[in-house]
Length: 84
Image (cartoon, rainbow, N blue to C red):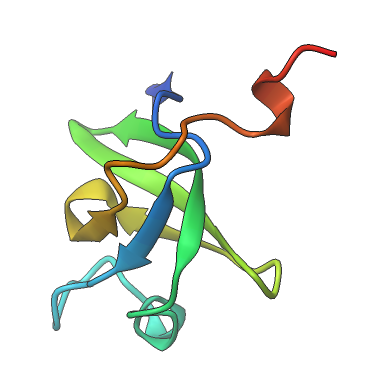
């Protein structure tokens, strides 16, 4: 299944607010609901944007972008984007 990467949101703080009963989510998605993480990348799969969110305990969980509360004021990018 082809996908397209979108990185303008890399490093942005995000708080997941998953909808109850979402068939594509597992227990871990609801376990991290309300916890602050940061976006590592966003990919588009089958017309939907899916964000890879990393948390302080180093756990990575995927959420639909529409289910994330984003810090719109945050500086974009991570250390990967910085030049020495």
